[in-house]
Length: 330
Image 1 (tube, one colour):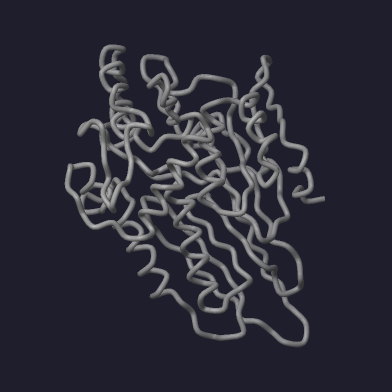
Image 2 (tube, one colour):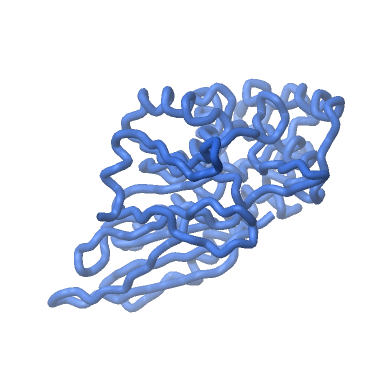
């Protein structure tokens, strides 16, 4: 399922002073979604071929939509050799699962499929089916030992969709920095990381999308952020859902209950240093809701979050951490 963009990248090309920089822009398709990369450098050389290679390697590692991928092999019970990037992804996922008390969980693969958000389409299981799947769900039921994935139940299936795109952004950024690029914007499936600035010294501009009433509505910027040296990720339910028999089913599944979340929170935008962290925590906060999210954020000064929710009268309301305000464009 294509991951729709919740962040709208506002790319503004500016001229600079005495020493002109070359602008490089590159867009395409990866992991079932679109990507956009923009960076400035003194060199005329671009890295399109290398970036394509990086993205292909990541897709082979973490995409559940690629039947030949590493994660698909693991879900089939095979034991492939695990590269360093996969070990990093797995370990950080388990850490965030523990810190979020299981609101973020990579063992939800069977639930995602049962609710029609994987290869099935618009299906909804009955309570007996949900209960039968729940026994296989839980980050505490899996581990990584001596380079091998250990599962309490062979039926447990992994889904890294709520963190993988953020991590792929980080990996592309690390590649650019290894080539001496320090002024860049990388966006994959709506997850964004920026560094440095544009040639005139201005910060990068990124927009938070206004929650849509219908998935087919045109995208509209709700608030614009001015950012640098930071990552931004948004999780939301306004575009990623289906309606069956008059009931709206969100794509965000609560690992504790086995059911899609049902509350007034429409989107969460998280700002963190690493994009994989912003991506995973945005999903965790969508699951737990505003109050519990803010309790966690009180103990994480390195992160900020912005919440959009629906009031009783249907109007859009917002809430945020105290530090988020400094990113708003004047």
